[in-house]
Image (cartoon, rainbow, N blue to C red):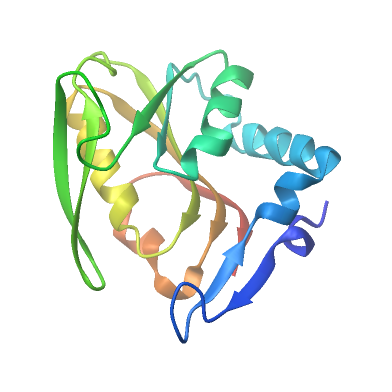
Length: 170
């Protein structure tokens, strides 16, 4: 299926010079949405997954769907102050500063096989910080799975040593 045809380019969003990849047309078509979930699951192959970790906020769209399809649990990774229980945090660099992600301290058990999912792989900062959170809790990152990869930003290079798969690449 040509998933790319359901991604809309939005020039100058969220700021001048950026071309935003909008996936809402893909989400609004029920047949394409279903096929996207199936394709993302197929990318996992025969890996046994205990937990799917999705990053705020668009990793929450397909992350729970993948968890259900993989007979796994779903774990949200959020920005500071959003998770109510005991949590650990990881700071990471962005092109324009730093940010922090958090995960509940009891969400990953030692030895859990983890699939990390997000909508877009850009520079790899968010995914890299999420890997560190999962590994600090004793989880094993089996694969990183993305709807879209912006290859020109070289995020995959930042994730060397991990299996990285994307449904759509630009």
